[in-house]
Length: 288
Image (cartoon, rainbow, N blue to C red; front, side, top):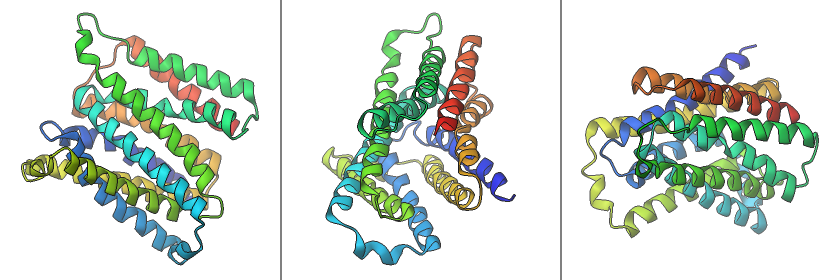
C-alpha cells in the first residue's frame, strides 16, 4: 500500500508549488519565472521517461502524434504563463480555485469533442458544483476595488488552456507512452517560454532576479517534478480512481499553506465554495 502515501505526497507537492511560485515572483517578472522553472520541470520529466524505459520509442512517433503533442505543449505553455501572471496579481488560494476549474472545462470539452458521455447527469452535476464553488471562492471582499481583479482574466485563461492541453494531448498520445509525451510537451513549453522572454526583451531581467526569489522559483519547479514522480509511481502501483481523487485535493493543500505562509484568509462563503469544489471534483472523478 505504499502507493497511497505517494498519492498524498503528489497532492502535497502539487499544492505547495503555487505557494513557492508566489514567493518567487514578488519582484520577478512572471514570464522570466516561468522560463526558469520550466527547465527544472523538463529535467524531471525526462527522469520519468528514463524510469519508464520509454526513451527508445521516440523513433516510432507518427507525424500526427508529434503535431498534437506540440500543440498540446504550446497550450501548456500558455496556461503556465497565464497562471504565473495571475499569481503575481492575486491571492494564491483564489487563483488556484479558478485554475482548478479546468477540470470542469476538460469534462465538457471531452463530452463534445471526444464523445465521452458516460454518466452525463453526474458529470454535469459535478461541473455545476465546481462552477458554483469557484464563484464563491473568488467572491470579492467588501471594499476591494475592481481594478485589482485583473488576475481573474489570466486565471481563467490558464484554466482554458489547461483544458485544451488535455484534449490535444488525448488526441496526440495514441500509441505514445505518457511520460514520453509529457517530456516532449515540456520541451515545447521551455522553448516557448524562453522565446517569449526574448521576444519581449526581458532577457536582461534574468540577471536581476533576487537570489531568494530564484531559490523559490527553482523549488517550485522541483516541487512540480516531485509531484509528477510521486503521481507516476502511485498510478503504476495503485488504484487509478483513488490516486486521481487524492491528487485533486492539492487545492486544499494550496489553501492551507496560503493561510499559514502567506497569511491569506478565506471568508466563510469562500470556505463553502472550497467544499463545493472538492465535492464537485470528486463527483466528476468517480464518473470517469
